[in-house]
Image 1 (cartoon, rainbow, N blue to C red):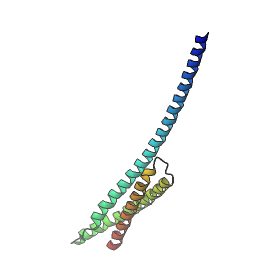
Image 2 (image 1 turned 45 degrees about the horizontal axis):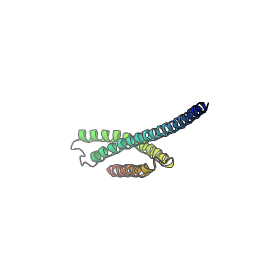
Image 3 (image 1 turned 30 degrees about the vertical axis):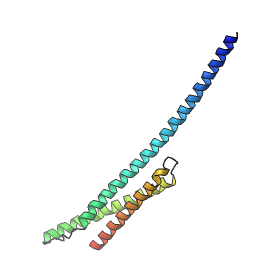
Image 4 (image 1 turned 90 degrees about the vertical axis):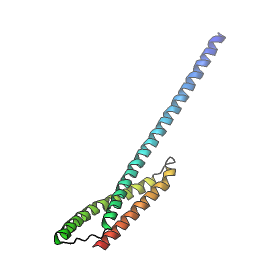
Length: 143
């Protein structure tokens, strides 16, 4: 009879340990899922910034050239390309504004997992704004 009580206690202890381990595993899985979601959000944000910064750098290089055409046809071609650029510029300007808004929302929603990324977000947003402002200045001086 005493052995039966020992087995019952052992079974209860093992069941309690199993339930505790299961709860810990469920909690860790939830935390990891949250971190992965946050990482995905950040990676998508970073990819958007990198894409816009690459576009800005390409256009800064293009606009800083001194080629104004040496024939009527060349000037007309360059004006046509510049008109297309201005249309494209407006689209990218709107996209930069959208990305900046997304970044601001991410900064506000920073969880303890993303605290270390807060300065990265802020730095990338500042870089994107600076590139956009410089491109706007170049555009204005070209007109």
